[in-house]
Length: 360
Ligand SMILES: Cc1cc2nc3c(=O)[nH]c(=O)nc-3n(C[C@H](O)[C@H](O)[C@H](O)COP(=O)(O)OP(=O)(O)OC[C@H]3O[C@@H](n4cnc5c(N)ncnc54)[C@H](O)[C@@H]3O)c2cc1C
Image (cartoon, rainbow, N blue to C red; front, side, top):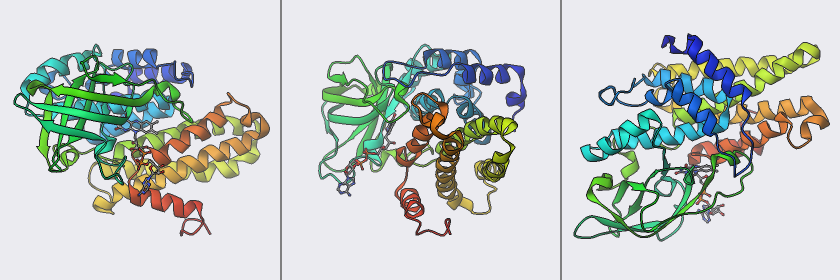
């Protein structure tokens, strides 16, 4: 494990994030949180060394995400969407796109996000792809609606794609001020409103050669990089959010020792999942490749149970709008819908219906 997380610099960053609670409103944006992250070097974690980054080992990147999300979930979530954009750019063979984008992403001067769920999870039951691509002499044209893009209102670039009539898909880096791009206002969410998540309409959007990152090819999202739906990164955030909740509950036990009985097993489970996350990241988890899905399922279950336990412990006071416990409950629900593969969702639904083995 990198000693980066034991430095005073990183400890200050976490304290800073814990103290600057971001409002849960669609007109809020965690600009200050992202700035302190950039100042602390977080934007270099995922960039290749040849582009000035640290290119941390996956186990370290996940440790960083886990620790940051325990301090502030919304800004860490926004960071993951930027990271997903960075990964798609860093793994392209298109050197021009890298030159145009990676230096600004490293310094924090450019913010990029992803709108890619329609290529993996969203709208998969629809006959017509949500974003249709067609080939032209100079490149491609995209038409349709990107249903989800976090921080699109704040982004300089959107990494998104479309599907050609023959089923092949492409991914491109689109300037959000390009002709044919219409960023929609953020939707009102159950939580994480400051992520300014919403749809982006694409109308006869011309994709130039330098903007093309991957494809056209079958299943473009499976190309070049991990980090697909339900990746270890998503579990790192669920485990981190749990750790944040349990930190508050542990504080409460100082005044109310009767709560220890309930906090202790949740904390033990959280510690075990943290160990499992590290093992999965280094390829040493006994479940092998199946660990990724297993972890997300367990992390989803734990983050929901921990947040609801905190709410129950705080009683009516915790149910009042604005109390951190009610916010934690709303935020925990996010993991049921964000980048959640079908088998994980099915397992969570089974648990909720009490028909699984986890509840007796
Ligand atoms: C806060 C938030 C932020 C997000 N940020 C991003 C982001 O930055 N980038 C990104 O790419 N994605 C993002 N996502 C998308 C996310 O990762 C998932 O892809 C998304 O939540 C899947 O939900 P959906 O409504 O699009 O799914 P869909 O599968 O499209 O479901 C939509 C509706 O369609 C109907 N339906 C579904 N399946 C069927 C079926 N088989 N038959 C009939 N009807 C059906 C149901 O009524 C369902 O409610 C975000 C999501 C959230 C909630």
